[in-house]
Each structure stands twice: as C-alpha cells, then as structure tokens.
Image (cartoon, rainbow, N blue to C red; front, side):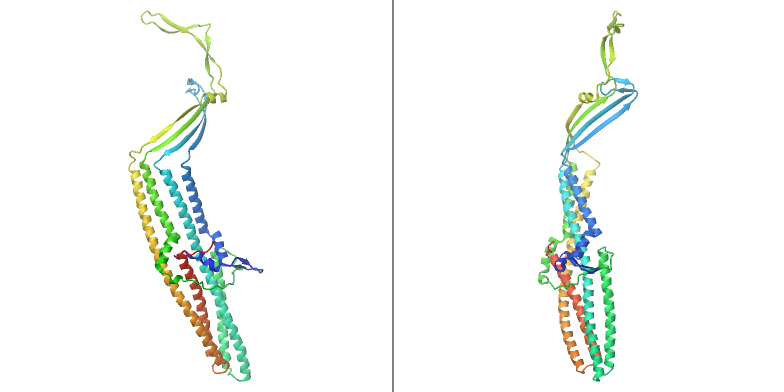
Length: 478
C-alpha cells in the first residue's frame, strides 16, 4: 500500500508552480512531485527498463523478418592450388576473389517467434507498471516530506499568534500594575510564559528549516537557502470513503494497484516461457537462397592449333602388336584473364532450398528447460498470492488508520473549541482581577497544544483519505 499514494494527493494540494519576486522560489506539492518525476534516479532507472523492454519487443518482431547477409573474400594462394575460374591445378601464386549474398527465412519454428513476441509485449506492460509504481513511491515520499513542512509552518503560526497575545497581555498587565489594580507578581508569570513561547518559536523555526532541507534533499536540490514551499492551507476533502465496505476497497485495489498488475504479468510471462520452452520439441523449417560469384587473376589457357614443329605426340601403344598410338599435338596458349566484371558475370551461381530440422534427442535439455519454466510459473503464482495478501493487509491497515484519524480529528476540533472557551473565560476572569496570570498562562498553553494537535490530525486525516481513495481507484487528472 504505502508505496502508493500521492499522485492522488496532488489533486488536492496542487496549486501551480509560482516564483516570487524575491529570491526564494515557492514550490507547490504538484511542482515538487513533477520535479521528482523528472529528476529522481530510481524513476530514470525504471524509464531505462521500459526502453530495454521496447528493444526486446523490436527483437521479437525482427525474428519474423528474413535475414540478408553479404560476403566477400579476396585471398592469395601459393603452391599447387586450383584456379577457381578454370578448375585447373596450378603450382603458382594465385589471387582469388569471391562474393555472395545469402537470404534466409524462418518458415516454422514451433511458434517460438510468435510466443516470444507475446512475452515481449507482456514485459513491456510489466515495465510500464513498474515505472508507475515507482512514481507512486516517490510521490508518497515527497508528499510526506512536504506535509511535514506544512505542519511545521502552521505550528509556528499558532505559536506566533499565541505569543502576540501574550505580549499584549504583558502590556495590559503593566498598565494595571501602574494603576495599582494587580500585584507585581502577575507580570512575572506572563514574562515567563513569553520567554517559554519565544523558545518554542525558535524550535519551530528550526523544525521548518530541517523539514525544508529534508524535502530539498529528496528532490536532489542543493540550494537550501532559496528553497521554500508555497504558504497554502488545505481543507479536508468531502468524501464517504471511510464509510464504504472495506472488502469493496480490497477488490478494487486488486484491480488498480500496480504491484498486483506486475505480479499478474509475471505469471503470464512465466506461462509464455513454458510455451517457448515447449517449442523446442517441434521441427523447424527454414528457407534459404544463396548467390555466389568469383574471379581470379590467373591466365586462361586455350588451344592454339597443331604444333608445326612437333605435330604429333605419343599417347600409347597397341597391346597385341606394339604399334605406337599418336594424337595431334596442340599448342596451349595463355591468353590472360578476363576482366573483373566479366568474370563476376560469367562465374556466378545460385542455390536455394529448404532445411528441415527434427529434434530427436538433445540430452534432456528441452525437457529440463520446460520443467524449469514450470517451476518459475509456480513461483510467480505464489508471489502473486503473497502480493494480494500483503495488499489486503495494507488496505485493512489504511482503513483502520483512516477511521482512527477521522475520530482523532473530530476529537481535536472539539478539544480546540473547549480549550478556546476555557481560555476566553480565564481571560475574562483575569481582566477583571478574579484570576491570576498563572491560571491564564496554563489555559493558553492548553489551547496552543490543542491547536497544534488539530493541525497534525488534519493533515494526517487528509493523507489517510487520499491513501484509501487511491486504493479505491480514484486518481487525479494527469
């Protein structure tokens, strides 16, 4: 759960980013969260995961496309080698050039490519859900820090107002002392109260600085001196969320929460991995087309006619008579190689066909891969079940917390009202001399404490309501 919230929180707290004419920049909650989304390292990592998933999908799509490869080779050979263009064995140095192109296409591979593409699409969704969950986590963290600054600022405002009243009472008491209507001791109690309130104001101012630094550090901002938040006050949202059935909230949360969606996609991915592993049981069929050509720098040899100096040559004899067998003695003339382009044109060739591969036995590799994938599927199912159980516990906790802070906020409002009445009464008695400064100081202290408790309860209530609404699928407009 608690990783979830504060994108919704923005809906009530966002006021639009503004900058004052003075040096300090006033940040709204919406501006803080947007800045965190743009700069947080964990979010950047999740965005890279999405890019990686996109590349994996592109790979899966590419598996359906034919492959095309070009090749070329230029070599020198010495010794007895075959001339690649004439087929004649020659004992000399030769240079041979060859080039070709190969096209291949996967006709059938046990639906492996199709299933790999489906898995890539599921991984894309899982990566997107992970990013959105990370944004929820960051928004919650930033909102908590922002909320603490708000509480600290409003606590300071209460203390300053109460101290202003104390100083007015000191002035009033001094006047009464001069008039002789109240004893000198009354001013001592008020002065002690004033000193104590001044100390509390200093502590509150320090709390604001600390909470602002904490928020700035969360945003990766190091200009602490010029960092501040907008001085805004927020109202309790009107909602009946705490009156809804908690089981309805749980069921809605299972449909809406990203951690559940991620776990569900991981189950689907594990199922696809089983199907991909089983694809190895099927035969594969590929088509291919090859084109090749070659060229050599060696001379060609051709018949130049009968040698006039030696027109015949002995090629054998008759076994029975011993008579000599002769044949014409042709001259062999070197006429030089054909030009480069002509050889490439004349010496080319093509081959094409299909290749069938039938798996028979591969050392149990395919079977074991299937079993591993099945084990991983069970792990994913267990993780999904655990995620749903954790979410259910989080919803119940958030539901109970929201009901508790609602009652606490209502109680603090009543307490403030009662303490205000008590203080007003104590002040009236003090003004007419029926009460001393100590009683008035104690009454004002109780009022201040009640007001501070109400501020804390108010923002705690807003926070808990937003958590529940997020569980129920109520989101802000992006």
